[in-house]
Image (cartoon, rainbow, N blue to C red; front, top):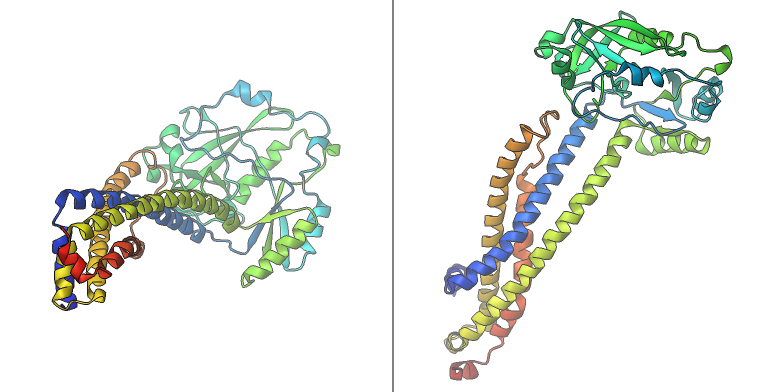
Length: 433
């Protein structure tokens, strides 16, 4: 009996007891389906995060603080502006000493610049606009993206901000369009919006800005981007009435290092700054934290899928052991006709592999079908603001690995029944009833 005969016979024998075969395949199907889905989620989200990191334009920049940035992203567009609530907390009382442990002073900037590998350092002015308004359509709270200077935005329309000089420009996010009264992204480009900001004593000032472009919502676009000219104008208005003894400084600084620096060199720079009491992160570091959490979740889900496959393996053992018992005389006849134990072992092992192959392929195909349907639903509902995110991404490589993994588990599960069949004594087997 050659290999082709063994495969054909194994498939035929597997289909003898259709009910038992179906129940075993269903058990494998559940594990393979779950593993394919979780693998696709990991591939999709990791790919999206990698694309976000790839969009970072300033790869040679460290953001440096004394305290973590507590900026909160907005997911559903800006909230309506409440002047009473905004002005109630807009003024600053005291001499500013409550912020002293977080503010980067001129001495701090000098210390950072002296660190090995740092080329230059500059303070990032922190502005907290109260609202944004367009054409008397109502005032709405304005969130500013602190990472705008680090990224190359994914533009829906318009152009990027002018980095140096020029007039005040703002880069809106797509979630602001309907709220502010724009028909679409193209309609917003070139329009003038009014930004309200409170000074040190709580008095409101208004500054005009031109919409340079509109960016798609993403991990790195949680708020509007401001160019330097607009930031300077808002900062000047924000500090009107500020006492001379309140001190100056910023909560955030950016430092440039050699773009050709290796990972080890960047780590050394961050370690030196950490020893001096500063937290330094690249954007890739910040995204890496998210990716670590996601990888952990995917790992747990994969573990449950593997447990399901192991349980299915016991089902294969049970199925083949019963098959060996039912076909004892048949095994004795094959041995009496000259078929050796190795060929019989190969026959029953092939049956196990076929069961694993059938269950894994059906599970993978079902997962791809369900995933395609889920992607369409999610893209039009809860993930509509995250353009380019495909949650379930089925790559041929991982799917193929899953099928091979399930077949391996099935082969290992079929080892015990196959060995029992191969060791049957032909005389005793022929007498079995």
